Length: 422
Image (cartoon, rainbow, N blue to C red):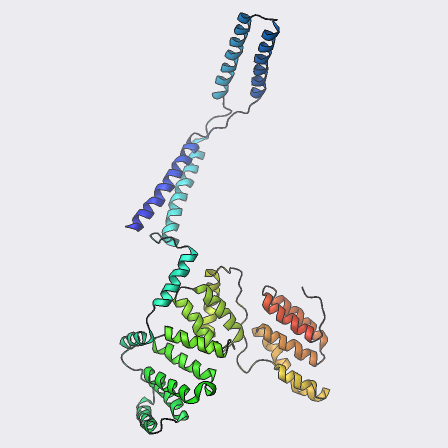
């Protein structure tokens, strides 16, 4: 019902505006210029004032003054009547008026069609504060881990088949039995969590990973142990981040504020609860921290441009894909170690890596950190001219990204490449 009311309201308003414009078009005329009318009116007004002054001085009598006033008033009325009916030219030509009417009708109908296709008739107004409040409510009221697991299991009741499943199932059963007798076997629970997950027994895999973390203790469990548990929990719900998984994300980020798995699922959680702006901020950071072949990279790169648009960042440009793991240039430690070597050994160690990195950045691009490493490496090799060329190119690539540009300029300063920054 609200849909029909809003559409009808839109067309009523549009037709009212069109009616006013049509009336103006139909009666269109080009009015005359004043051509002295205002000057004549000013003369008459001055004459009336002069009559009053003559009467006050006694140069004319009352009857004469009244007669002169009547005559001046008659002339003013005639002038005003003539001006009201005075035009220059004829009404607008009929073809021009019909063309204008056609354009107006097309505009009304076209705007209505665009409203129906691109607009959201029937959708209530939602100020930003209200949208954020609704998102917070959605986040607070989402189902728990157990409910989401049950719903996902109901949608896919049959476990996924794969080659070797028949052989793996009895082995996992034996591992379960062995762990019942060896409840402190850390390696055993690690294997059990991985293989239960492979069989699709996610609830059992989660329980095994929780037990593993308990056995390792607060100090012994690594960030990757928590990250794998987080992976299992989200996979078990079909991709939804539950409140329990969110708690685990917070624990993981307290251990490692840049852990990519925690950042990935944190961004996904905000996307699922109506805060794409927060997803954009988190995934933008994740993109810059990740290797080019990270499992989430395709999803993040495809989502970032749309997330930027929704978040009010229309000038955002997706940066080049980072290099795959193992394909990056020499690390800071490599370069530092090379500085203590003889020039010959140092060149032999770094030359090949630097040339490979040059080719990769030229073909595939890379992050600001990659460019900074290359600048430092070129400085160590004393290839200053080439380093300056690379510095200018890097400044061009990252000109619209102040944070990355700062990384480039800091690396250039540290490498002794002193050129004016743009």
